[in-house]
Length: 126
Image: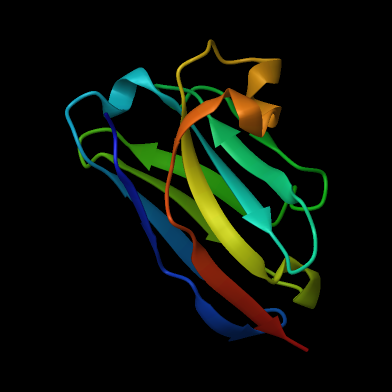
């Protein structure tokens, strides 16, 4: 069992930055590939970024490439997403999630993730 707790959300002006953190409980954090998803009001939850168990591989949604950076610290059981050049369309609840499946196309599929955090709200004002 892994519990995930996101933090770092808030209100920011367009063009600003935020760093979200996701702290995981347990001693098996490094066994999981990790992902970030987001859900805007009235929309489905979408993939944002993913990182492999040791951090050697990352993937991003086209909408955030070049602006967001995912990273992890296995010693601290934490995964991060640094969000720069934020836009109003980035407004959403952001969730982190843990994936047991091998890193690959599965990272884009939210149904493959086994543990989810409660989410943190990010609001970008224009």
